[in-house]
Length: 97
Image (cartoon, rainbow, N blue to C red; front, side, top):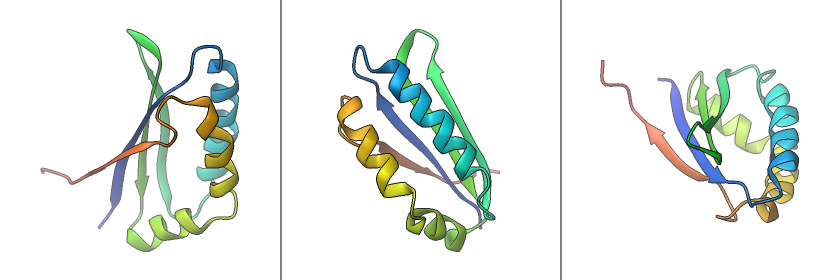
């Protein structure tokens, strides 16, 4: 079964360029993972500092491999001081149909 989630956070005022660059680089890396099916980064039209990342992995093993990848901790460490929440808020999604 696919593992699908939405990661949400808000960039701090003045940090939006740094957040956007971190995400561009990270997205390119994650998209190369064998089990990654989607890693789409969005901002909210009415609030461009609000980021939503839609992620889909082939299965739970692929998601765990993503979590264990060596570039995840450095990314999250660099992102934490640039966002209001301190860490992404994760929402796991299940298909309806």
